[in-house]
Amino acid sequence: MLDGAIAPAENSRLFGHGEAEAFLAQSYKSGKGHHAILIEGPEGIGKATLAFRFANHVLCHPEPTQAPDSLGDPDPGSIVSRQLASGASHHLLHLTRPVDEKSGRVKGAITVDEVRRAGKFFGQTSGTGNWRIVIIDPADDLNRNAANAILKILEEPPRRSLFLVLTHAPGKLLPTIRSRCLPLRLKPLDAGAMRQALSHLGFDLAGASGEQILAAAGGSVSEALKLINYGGLDIAAAFEDVLAGQGPAVRKQMHKLADILSAKDSETIFDFFSSLLTGRVMQSARDAALAGDIEKAERFARFSSEFAERLALSDAYNLDRKQTILSLLDDLKDAL
Image 1 (cartoon, rainbow, N blue to C red):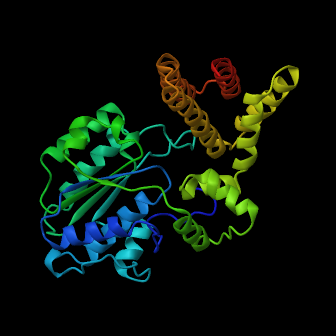
Image 2: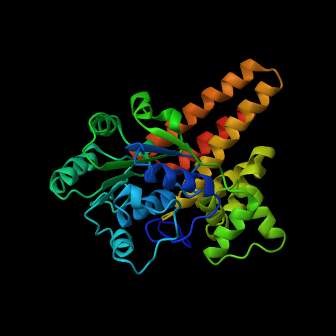
Image 3: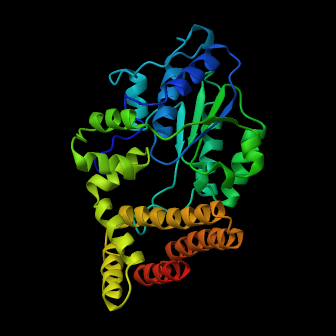
C-alpha cells in the first residue's frame, strides 16, 4: 500500500462517485441486482473503496428490501466494519496478487491457486444462508488459468453470492468474463473531489505545487500520492528532460534516472515510471492519429504493446532493470 493511503477496507469515506453509490444501493434494494458487477476505471480513483463500501452495506443489511436506498459511511466501530478491516470476515473474500513467501515481493499475477480459495470459501459458507462476497482486485491481474477458473464460477454463481470485479482496463479481460458482469464505469476524480480525498488523507494542496500535483495526477489519488511522497514530480521532469535532450549530457541523465528507478525498494516509483512511459507512447499515437499520420499512429500503438511486454518480461524473469530502462528510453527517443 502507498505511503499516506488508507486501505480500502478501512476507508470510511469516498469522494466523487455519488452516482455509482446511488446506483448500487438502489439496485440492491430492488432485490434484482446483478450477481457480478464490473467496476471499471483508471487506477487510484476509488474502485476498491467503493467495492468494500458496498460489501459493508450488503453485509449490514442482508435483506435487500429492508436496506437503505443510499450507501452511508460505514461505522468503523461496527462488527462488520471491524471484520472487513482486519480481513477476518467469513462473508467476504478479497482476491488480489499474493506475496511470494521466498522473496517477500508481491507476485506478478493472481494465480489459479488464489481463485481456488474462492471455491473453498463458498464450500465452507454454503450452509449459512448469508451473503458471500468476492472482491477481485483487480481482475486485470488474473493469469489465464485464474481467469478461466473465475469464469466457471461466474457461469454458475452460488446462491446469495456477489462478485465485485475491479478493472483498470476492461478491454484486456476475457470477453466471456465481461459478458457475465454488469459494467459500472467510474470516471477520474475532478479537482474538487481530489482535494477532498487528499484532505481526508491529511494533504493540503494549497499553492502552485498543489495545482501542479492536481494537473499531473489525472484524477487519481494514488498518482497524487506517488507525486507527493515518492518524488514523482522529479521523475516526470527528468523523464521529459531525457526525451528532449541530445548528446553526452543526456546519456548521463539517462543513467542517473535508471539508477534511481532500479534501486532497492523502488517498486512504487518504477511502476509510476512504467505508466509514464506507456502513457507517453499512447499520447504520441493519439497525436499522430489526430494529425492524420496513420502509419505513425500505428507504429506508436505497436510500441505501446511492445514496451508493456518488455516491462512485464523484465519483472517476470528478474532481468537487469537498469538495462531495460535504458533500452526503452533509447527506443522511445529514436521513435520520437
